[in-house]
Structure formats: structure tokens, C-alpha cells
Image (cartoon, rainbow over all chains, first blue to last red; front, side):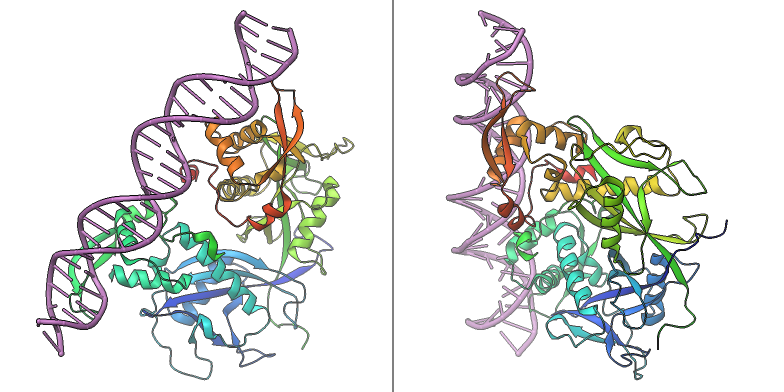
Amino acid sequence: MHEYSGQHRILVAVDCIIFGFDGANVKLLLVKRDLAPELGKWSLMGGFIAPSESPEDAATRVLEERTGLKNVYMDQFMVFGKPDRDPVERTLSVAYFALIDIHQYEEQLTGEFSPEWFPLDNMPEMIFDHADMVKIALKELRYKAALHPILFQLLPGKFTVPQLQSLYEGVYQTEFDDRNFSRKLLSTGLLVKLDEKDKQSSKKGAFYYKLDQSHYRENFEKFLNLVPNPDKFF
Amino acid sequence: MHEYSGQHRILVAVDCIIFGFDGANVKLLLVKRDLAPELGKWSLMGGFIAPSESPEDAATRVLEERTGLKNVYMDQFMVFGKPDRDPVERTLSVAYFALIDIHQYEEQLTGEFSPEWFPLDNMPEMIFDHADMVKIALKELRYKAALHPILFQLLPGKFTVPQLQSLYEGVYQTEFDDRNFSRKLLSTGLLVKLDEKDKQSSKKGAFYYKLDQSHYRENFEKFLNLVPNPDKFF
DNA sequence: TCAAAAGTGTTCTACCTACACCCATGG
DNA sequence: CCATGGGTGTAGGTAGAACACTTTTGA
């Protein structure tokens, strides 16, 4: 026996909701679609799953092909599968959100289909159900980030506490008390203080920190509470 | 244009990890596989997605066909997609966990392929990667149940606080302090006290409660804390 | 009247929150 | 020398954890 008979096979794609943070705003990386129909319209980065690939493999490949980035934090969060979501042909989409350090992302040669960053509050119209996917991805991001230290993935290797705070404020669209935030954050034991200071944003300068990688991995599943009353955001 | 050319289409199934609670143990409902290969071996309840169905539709249909149950709480939690997970033909599986009131489930006529309940600590050997799926489903169940009141779905319409506690203890395989548990539980405002008592398990008798449905729905997203130190279970 | 389970009460502690205040420094 | 942002300190409140005790009633 080499296949199940009488069954219906479906095209399966992966789509990546790619989050970045430029220091002030949380942004999403979109591309112009390079296929008909809807050619040239904004779209998530996606691609079909090849015969030898798992969905994870495909998502990793798509991300690398389009951005040049490897070892990116990704989370499979939902399958979108309404029969008519793609007007061309039934296509299932396995959706991932990805968190990248926006500065690692090298501007691709700006061709007609080059990717572009959009702030969350100013997204362009998108193909198919991609706007729904973004909405749900953001919700998932907020949910997961309220409990686990994933937002570090959006920052460079060294960062300051105030930077991290504005990242959290960007993700949750609120302001947090600086003093409580930094105390909670430092008490997690996740950070290692460096000697260097960032003098960009203040005269006093803020110390850089880096992640304590082993502590990070060991405590990843632990619930954190960097976000006060997180459930109000869902 | 009626389809994307040159792409590889994949068979897509849904599989349901069906949890039940008999008052003492958390159990899973398995069936004997009715297809070659591995015919007769234990398997999750599953089926292929039909052309007109979304994955949710398919999971709902499979569950109803096999158990007769409608309106069951289900959560899509992961796609399993390693290219070789099904030896017959590449098959993607969208996995759902389902929570049913075990007493609602009417024993099907006990044919050769009739479903059977297995306690979590005594599962039979299963086909393909179904054991992995169960493991991850249990983890997801514990994760979600630590934060949201989903375990009510495993109990009948009326239930006592001690019953609910042994359910939680079954899911997390620990014991909780009775006094703290009931106080926390009642303070959620999720329960409505009934006049009737359950006299089965004690002489004094324990009051029955039912869910306050509107409160349940409104507060579903809120984080609860019925499980002390939940992260130690992940 | 006693055993067994249900249910209420109390204290201790830890953490979260909301503040006020000092620090460092570039202009 | 002062404005600006960085960082630390402190007091009050709340909620969770650990514990003791009373209540009910069938046998």
C-alpha cells in the first residue's frame, strides 16, 4: 500500500508573522505578493511546504530565503483552514510568529517586491485572511510574552532596561511604572549586567545587560509577571 | 486560474485527544484503527479533512461520528507534520484536545473497533506518533487549565467542590490543600450553589454547584490561580 | 458517640503597587 | 547648575500558603 485511496489532498502553506522593534514601535515585516492573483498586494511571508519538509522546516526556510536570517525564534500558533480562504485553490496555512532583532535584518535590495516594515497601528490592506492572522498572532504574542521572556528575542544582544521597558510598552500599548518594571526584571535573574553604558537616550546613561543564556533556557517555562494585570490585554 | 501549479498537495487529517474524568482518574478515549496498516492497533480518534470542511469542522464531525457528542469543548493545539510520520503516505495532522463529560458518553455497541477509556498512567501502545501527541496534549491541557477554567468541561452540569478538586488533582497528579482550593474556587464567582447535596462520598454531604455560564464566558480569558505553582508541572 | 468528610477562620509571608527620592551628566 | 532620564528605597495592601478548628450525619 502506497497511499490512502479516495482522499482529498490539500495544498499546505506556512505563513510567518514577523515582529520587529525599532526602539519605539513594534512592527511587522510584509512583502508584496509575487503571484497572481492579488499580485503586488501586501502579504505575510509565506510559502508552500515541500515534499521533504515539516512545517517547521518550511517556515525556517521561508524566513531565511526572504530575510537571510537563521536561528530565529518562532512559534507555531494556529492553522488557518477555511476551505475558501484562498480564492485560487484550497490552501491550508500553518501560521508562525517570528521575533527578530530588526537591526539584524539587512535591507534587501529594494526591488519591486522588497519587504517593508509596518507599525501595528498603520497596517496596509493585506491579501486573503492575513489581517486576521496578524490579529491573532498579536494576541498570541501578548499572551505568551506576559508569561515567558520571549520579547528579548526582539532586541540586540545587549540592551538596557529602559529599552526593554519601551518594548513591553509597545507590545501592550500601555505604560508601566519604570521603578517596578526594572526591579521585577532584575529580580528574575535573567540578566547579566555589562560594564558598558548606553549614552544615546540620556545624559546619565543606562547600563547594558545581556541575557544569561543558561538561566534563560532553564527558566523559560516559569511564569513571569513583568506585565501587571496581563489578562486585561486579551 | 484555478490552481497553483507545480505544487505538492498533502493529505491532512485531524486527530482528537479526548479527555474524560471518571471521578478518580483522568482518562483518554482511544479506538482501534480500522485501516491497514496497523489495523486493530490503538489510535486516537481521527479522520481526513473533506473538501468542504475546515479543520474545526472535521474535528467536530469525527467526534460526533465516533462518540455521538455535540458541542464539545475543543482546542486546536498543534500541527504534526514530519514528512514520515505516517508510513503509508505523507499526512499532516491537526491535533485537538477535547474535554467531555465521561457520563455523557454512551458506551457504543461493543464491536471489534469500539472505543475504550485508558487512564493516563496505563496507556497502550499506539500507532505512529500518537503517543507524542498525547504527551503534548496533556502538557497543553495542564498549561491551559492552570490559567483558565476549562476543566469544568469534564464534569457533569452539577458537581461538588471536592469532586472538582479531585479532578484538578488527577490532572496535575498532586494533592492540593482542600481549604485553600475551595476558598479560591468560590471566590472566582464562577459557581452557583444549588440546594441539593451529594451524599455519595460523605455523611455530611457536599453541596452541588453549577457553572454561572455568563460569568464563565465573560471571565474565561482572565488568569486564575487554582493551581499553586503551576509552572512546576510543565 | 465516633469517624470521616465538608466547610470556615486565622496568621504569616511574599510580592505587587504606588509612591518619593537620589544619582549622574551633558549642555 | 539644572533638566533629563536612570536607578534605589519604602510603606501599604492583597493574595497565596500553611495551619486549626467546627459542623454534619450515618453507622
